[in-house]
Structures are given as structure tokens and as C-alpha cells.
Image (cartoon, rainbow, N blue to C red; front, side, top):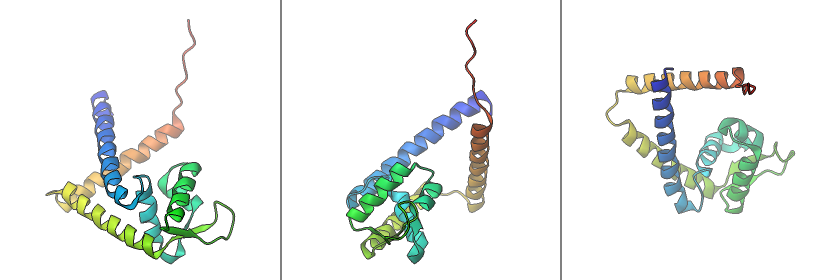
Length: 156
């Protein structure tokens, strides 16, 4: 990626991330939750009665254990989710309660509305190509993060 491309990419992705966090926070405030709860609720909704473990959520969300643990604890305290009590802390299955399913359904509907607004008049094939390209770039960035180490030069 050329320097100009790198700067443009990092600036645009940072701006997109901030806008997404703002949108999530605005919607989640209605439920007494933060933006961090959004994806977890949607993942649990998609999992249905099978539910998900903390370990599975950590892998899906690519966040640390402490954050997933806090999110699940808050969802349980507010009545949106329940753990089944089996297994260890990271293997316990969490499922949405009726209240959680209702909230997650409303949140997914709002996400769909935002997606339609953001996609605007883009043709489906253009949007598909964008996501394929973004996925390719992210995969390569993850590979670069595993491959490259930047060593400090020794002072001369």
C-alpha cells in the first residue's frame, strides 16, 4: 500500500469506526447498554437456543476475556441474557432471555435500517466487491501483524 493509500486507509477506517461507535452508543443507550454490547447481543440472537460460551464470543468478537466477561455480566444483571451454570467460567453457555431476544431483534432491525441508509444507491455487486476487498486487506493486515516485527535500531 503506498504511503498515500496507507494514510487514506487508516484515516477513513478510523473515521468509520468512530461513526459506528456513535451509532451503536445512541441505540444502546435506550436499553441501558453501551456500544460494546451490540455485537454480543446480535451474536447471541443468531446462536438461538444453542447459545454461546465466553470463549466463543471472545473468538467471534476479537476482544479480550475481561471485556466479554463484563459484557455478559451486565447482560445477565439487566435480564437480557442467562448463563446455564454448566462448565467453567469460559465454557458456560449464555442465551438471550425473552427480554434479550426482543431487544436484540429491535437492535438488528435498526442495524438493517442503518445499513440500507449507508449503502444508499450502491449496486449490490459494488457493495460485494467492497466487502471482498476489505476482507482481503484485513486478512493481509493480520498476516503482516503476525509476520513483521519492528526492531528498534541500536543507537550509533
